[in-house]
Length: 244
Image (cartoon, rainbow, N blue to C red):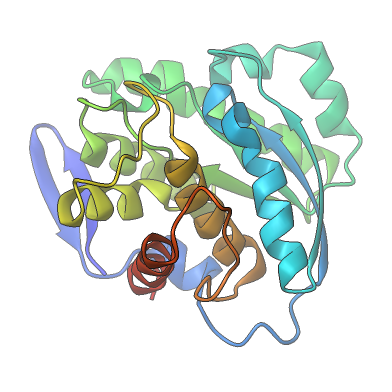
């Protein structure tokens, strides 16, 4: 699988990302926990179309159980989350198996490296440290989200990959699959507007999260009546290919 990294204005490619080698493989799911507790931290990219609920339904169809809470005020950044007493109370409970972190949509696409370091990476690190302080065994998962419709997806992918590596965390590589699908099937409308996912886009995202959290292939998962069989199978197989 090709991975994309941005340094300055140049794009560098790496055949295998260390993050995936350490934390992800689409292998037999035996031995994996069938019950997990997940805290989703983000904004409307997480809450729209009830992404966590969709993931839980996919898990249920395979006899897994995902209990979850979501804290996703509209437009929130990592900086805002890190100072929010409501969220900090949820983190301090410490009963999470996974904590998902999703940054405000425009922040990971910042081109100025110094600003990116100060306004995004620093707060990603702070949130990761808070999670680990509450429960060292909790796994932080960075949600590599879709870029705004006309923005640079590769830059967003690179930023999230860096955050996962910097914090020895997991990565849900939605952006990598998103870019591939937009390239191969531009007729599929993954966007509801210029930044939020449509139902199809959320289904793609949910399948990536299912595979990431449960280490199980998404091929054959159920889908809603709003997605036809052919589209669902294509998305599932594309995700499996991208995550091998």
